Length: 369
Ligand code: NAI
Ligand code: MG
Image 1 (cartoon, helix red, strand yellow):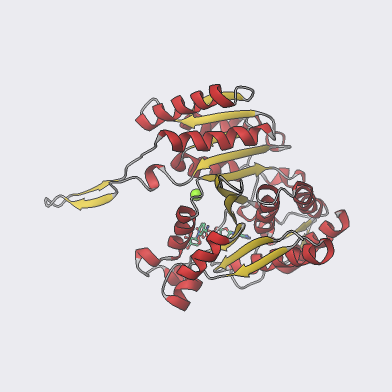
Image 2 (cartoon, protein in one colour):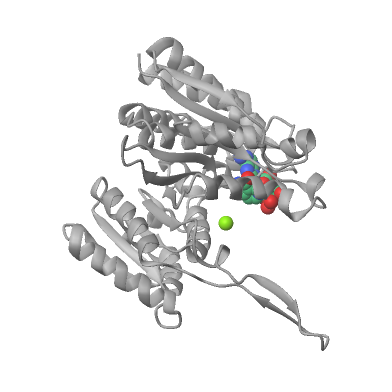
């Protein structure tokens, strides 16, 4: 039997509540379908800090590195606001991304038909929307050196962040975008700011060359990132795959996500380079939202973002495409039936908590399987 190893890091706050719903789906897939998932579980963020005084322990880092895929819940919260910078909850997430070398962050923005009315845009602009934002995740201004605040000694301080990109970093993220586009509508739009940034000039050059060399069959367009932001809210359906750097990707993916409604709905995947021998990519799957301290412990968090992240895991780490499609369909069907958590509640719908939403999606998934 195939074994598929999953390392679960629920984290803090609603992370533990939403991960519980994914655990049920994994258990059922093992029981009923012989899926062969072998799961282990660790601590990250505030839960790791409380237990060990770190953002993630070395033991758990080893397990994350060894697993086929990591499922991550959420971390953070006011309880840890004053812990030292190096061990704050978010440091656990950054460490995982860096050590697993997860350079490609995939953020889908899809519109579930039942939620088109809930968008901040007119329903006809988002009905059927299906965009994938591919954000470079391990380079750029979040990591570039120097990165410092210096005291100028005259009552002034100077803050420096540095945007750095090398050719190979741009080439590999472009390749991910082109390959994903081939499984979709075959179009990539690359976004940078070559008009004011040297890194934008190189980005444009390398994406163009990668396209010409290896992916000429894919349709490629370029947009300045600020114009891209405008186009995303003006005519979002013009895009298939968008590829961009770490900083612009952070913002543009949040903009794209909000076209389709609640933070509680949004999954993400982060992928590393394929292993030269096995071809397997390191990968981590996580909802876009945080630990939602304002509702944590109340049993009302929407588990869909976490469940949809697991669907991405099935698709990208295990090539279980049919299962991923069915799980996503199960989510759509449950929404269609008017079953909603508080964050996506609408008139005439039935309000449920985290557990009931998870159970209903699992029941629908079983019915479709
Ligand atoms: P947040 O995403 O935790 O919450 C923002 C708002 O959306 C809150 O009102 C929350 O109740 C609501 N919300 C989020 N997810 C929801 C869900 N699944 N169901 C229903 N409602 C949901 O962002 P916030 O409040 O800015 O940050 C809280 C903590 O989380 C902070 O410590 C922050 O640093 C951390 N954070 C962690 C992330 C991660 O673990 N990847 C990402 C973003 C923030
Ligand atoms: Mg962000």
